[in-house]
Length: 260
Image (cartoon, rainbow, N blue to C red):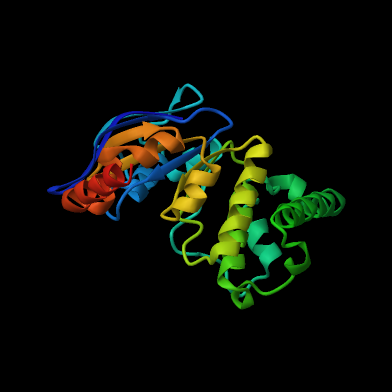
């Protein structure tokens, strides 16, 4: 994924301003920044929810600027959202099956019982495998609305994976997690990467970000202010200032110098 000088304006609000990023195939890429920095807006632009005001988006070398959400999904981009959106009356497995809708038969073939049954059985096995990889195989037939919050998050990730994406966008998947759930999520994200799926992660849990990400970019007020390896981002003064404010960042730097 290549993002070149992307801007997005909502009336008088400049949500994104000339953001440029390049996500390499097979990596876990972190996107962090304070609340209101433009992270989710960038995801919305990538996935066709909002058109860009200016700039260019490329996926695998192909221009996807201002494609519709359907076109982007068909090109191999899947995402989750900050809030969990599940079909609460369906089971975990049925929710994941919804992510496979692009692969369901339609037309005349769907009217052939043997062919349709075989196709459905294959898709159900595949959906169950996605849940099993996330440690939820035994809960596949459990009603989604009765699952704990962390497991609902996993169902949403499994549903995104069911669309067979090349690029997976995770928007704050560890929100509301305890330490153990966050550690398990880190392991799950690595498992996804090992399946050959490039992942971009928006997350406020810095333990998760620093643990799993190969590279990290930082947004602040809609602009990219830093990009690099986790160790570089951790020590970047602009990043520290964005999160703490100038006075506290100066105080923290003075404290480190005193200790040193």
